[in-house]
Length: 166
Image 1: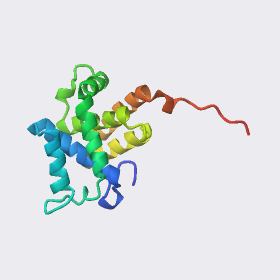
Image 2: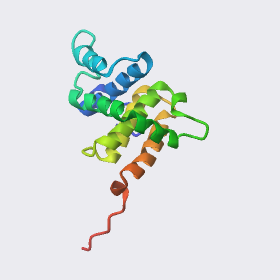
Image 3: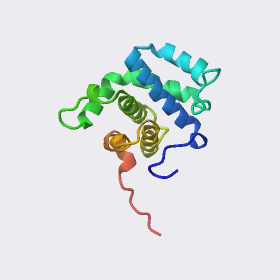
């Protein structure tokens, strides 16, 4: 996949599909006020399989999907102010597009909770998720915000390692 291309169905891994689904679920929870357990059940029963299945989401890692949602809900009071700090002066997270807000929340939750996923991988994945939903500047916004936060939240992953003598 090229740097600016949208991921195609065949290029979407189980975890990428889980992230896309998590963004959709977070969006639904944000706008419709859907309960966490209800939205997880809906995705498991309808979106990942069955008649209403979304082919992009069919192979999603269901455990990873639910973990992202639970992390966002559990840590939202911590996540939102962290994102707010990175936004341009005068902007607040509540003013940001709902899908973009869901992408940022998922990305920050993963940076905070999923140390099994390298920070650079999480950033790249959420930039690709942004490309699924947006064609304009939003993927760059996601990259900029998550990169700044990752360098703060996971500093050790970005420190230069001393060169080993040969």
